[in-house]
Length: 511
Figure 1 (cartoon, one colour):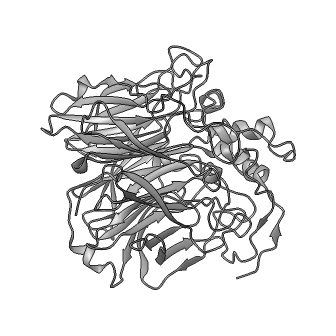
Figure 2 (figure 1 turned 90 degrees about the vertical axis):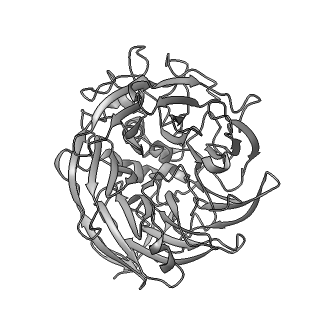
């Protein structure tokens, strides 16, 4: 273990780390995202010469919000990582959590730039997205997960959800066509495609591609909500950052897309509405927070007809009693400490929402004293008479190295009745288990943190999603592959007895 020096490293060095690795032409061509532009509305600061046009193009090519690593005004040009002591290959973990299994990326997804993304679960299977397709895992024995099949189908992010025999993928990179045999193609070309893909997974070992639905500005993420009679599956599509030069992504784009998938005829999937969420305009450009030009992520609680939206510069609540026509009922902003409203998680009773702030777009090292404890964090809100009331921030307390991208990211509830406990991914900050039962005083109860992927450059890595499913924690690690953890703690052990046959974290169910 060694003490690290004060790192004279800024967002430019971060972007250079991304630029050091060329993106494979199959999925991450420069025209894919750099030409697309909506992942990179960020601008280089005049005091940050390392954020050159070439560096910004490479960051945009990485997708998600990684281009925000070069965003002016984020002010993390010098990072104090002196307390970060882990080296590559080392681990810091609390005594109540242990790694049961790690299966490295393999096959067509083995490359450094084939980023592992989101997770969904059904029965004895886990489904893991990847910028180049998705993997089906057999997790009947959690300590020995095995690959059932890998589906090569490029188009970031390929975030995944499952419902019965249906699997849905989100594609938010402009492609030459809607098939799995495609290449990147600029969104300025009218014939380019992006949106959602629908697969039949009645035979998990041989998924069958049955439908493609183009949506405005693509599909960065999506959220599922079945109709009350369960005959139809509604898919709420989040996308953002329009551009006047993109025929299928025109400003102001203050909407989401709603796709209806007939459960018995998924090949008939189609857009049924495009509700405008911000008729009076969202958060405006300028200042600390992002301008609102769409939503990044929506989380539904169908049993309660609720949905929470993380929409760049705004946090919202929606009524989804009319599935095809969601209606905004509450809006809140945090222009002081939230740079980019990224995702949302309800507690089990639907009386709280945890919003995440993805400061730096997921590509920046924000877990250090320089950035502080309230930026790039979670915001805990109570819902009181339909209003969102801020209570506290939560951020992991461990300093991460300047070569580690770290910020609040995807997590799920751990089903402990009477408590609000969550497991969450923090990219290279690892995974954290924390209790927000007392909304004003959240506390961490477990963590598992690997050292940096590399010591001399920032390689985009770490846990993209960390979710609890049927007694174990599963993590999709961008570079390390597929992880399974066992948590042994008196505060959470009762959750091991809670079983479900399906889990899509953005479509919450009661326990």
